[in-house]
Image (cartoon, rainbow, N blue to C red):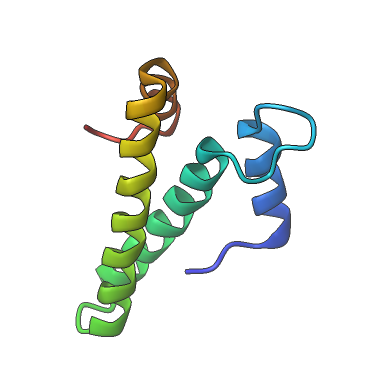
Length: 89
């Protein structure tokens, strides 16, 4: 579901491009992927949580848009991020 502040800071430090980077596409994709994975696990046990499913679809759509943007501006960065996060595409 939600991620802790410490986990978010770890993701930012792992995927940042510069020292003060907190909002690049890679960082946003990494944070969204972590949220998606947590929500997916939640939905495996709570199959009738339709509001949660809607939230998951919105997160996936937002991540897809960021991935498409990254693929358009820099294909190599796109390939690197999907490989590092193990996202199938």
